[in-house]
Image (cartoon, rainbow, N blue to C red; front, side, top):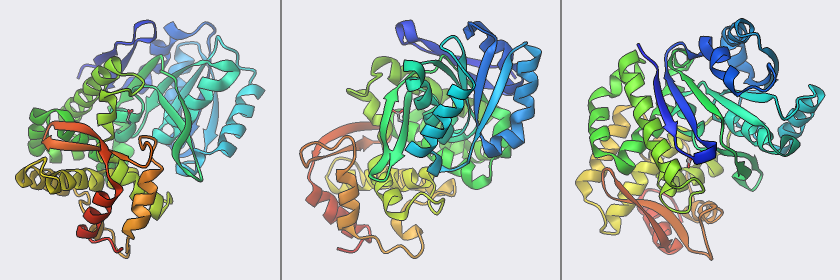
Length: 371
Ligand code: GLY
């Protein structure tokens, strides 16, 4: 099966996203044209390094590239100031200079952390993304958002720093657990829900094949998401407008994540799945969208084994007031008014800038939250 190349048209900072099987084994030759020296630092998720590090090392060796590997503990906790300081010091100890390059090798946590480190290391050094989760391949590795979390919230400290190249090797997804695969799939559904009804219809049919990691279906799904993201990022790199649509389900979802914590009890994709279903139901409650479309969105989410409702999260009595408080910390909130991505129909999302917290509070009560 061939590799699909999706260009991200950002002028002087344009780059390609390659999607296909076996790209890990071609990483050395693919990255070589971007190197001024034959040297890279690989920032690797510790578990990913155990599973796939040897393939990457062999590929660099074949291309004559010296690759030092820095491993980072798996998990959201690594997106911290502490880990950023450790990583920066490790990069400095390698005496990496601006002609060298950082390779982010892992899921969204590694891409965000290594990408942010690359954006500030000696005032900026090039980096390449090798995303190893479905979520990172279809979303976080493309578009240059990099960040760490603070105790006040997720992704609050960061920078836009575009990679020079993204290599999305579909074979590494075979090592993901079914739960992780489903969580990434929530972001895949998100693309159909926000802007492409025909892709959504395709997903309604092909969900089992994608989740079973059947190569053709998986390649089609990942490439279509990446193409849509590339087009949006090229138009609105800094999220002044249309890029915000990619946050469908995220304001609702982030509030659940903030409430539950980031210890794996609720995966980001699971929170986004509930968030997308809630965004559609809230849109219905505001007379913006038909109930049939909201039900169809929920059916597709549930059919992929993802939660659609806060009641699907056992033992969680959510307080509406606390969820609204978390939503008010969102980067998009301005002057006490909340911004949400809402929907007129499947494939037709829009940004609603002036949502009152009282309306959200009342909606959350109808969703089963307590006052
Ligand atoms: N993950 C949303 C974005 O990149 O804009």
